[in-house]
Length: 104
Image (cartoon, rainbow, N blue to C red; front, side, top):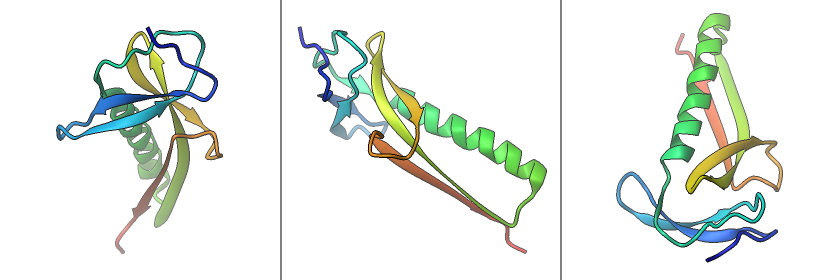
């Protein structure tokens, strides 16, 4: 049994295209993270959800150009990878920048 520590654990993750990577998972307490293969779906679902929510707002305000930058911290919850939205500081595992531009 492996427990997350204050600095996080590196666990194997399978990407949608079948590639395998190791991801540092933030420690959220003494939870068994194990070393079984996790999927990245929870993280990609979070990115898509944030992008869709922002796109909906942008369609209402209709700017000619917009960009949004946010950070995600990857955590384990109930044995699955999840993404927690964090400030784009050194705490994030992933820093995402989304950009939109309307062609005039």
